[in-house]
Length: 247
Image 1 (tube, rainbow, N blue to C red):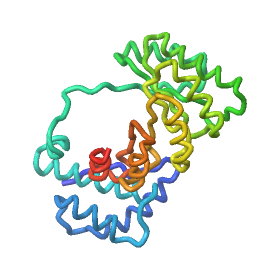
Image 2 (cartoon, helix red, strand yellow):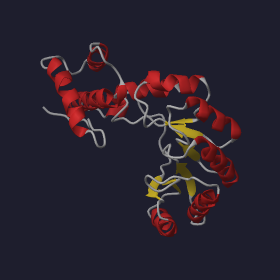
Image 3 (cartoon, rainbow, N blue to C red):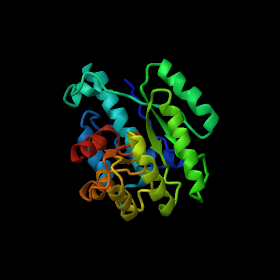
């Protein structure tokens, strides 16, 4: 019987493979149903812990173990994790938003697919908002999506420096966004806390945090309103469940 998990890291796949192979080899012959035991040994057994490469490798292993246990028992993961909490959940669609002239069309297409909310970029890839004048362009792009009947979440990707991020967050507040994501990189918690204190818009982050210990200071300080752990980078189902419980 075989099972699968996603041990990936954009742009660093070979590094994850190198980290995954010794973890995999260590547990050959072990009972795959002992998921928590394997996770703890894999995490705590090495001298170096955490970070995107090691945690992505562990995520792939954890996903595969849950997949395998589900195949053995004939149960889906949600059943093994304790059963349903909600019968339905709202989802948003990604539309990019790097090119203003495409936003309305993209939002309209998502609406026709049945979505009522979208997420888009605050800036183009590798772009930089160096003057306040450029902030108005961001507002116009958000309004273009809202004009198509969409609720909007805006992803800063941590690309904007703190003074501009503060101004943009304030400028966007009247638009009633679902959230602003990574207004600054998570390596700048004090700056994030400052922005969180300036606006009522929910702050989202977490795709570049890799364990409950990474999330802990943001939750303790009240910096974040919406957490976004990635199942393929933050330790798989086992660790993400603990992160969710902590939140």
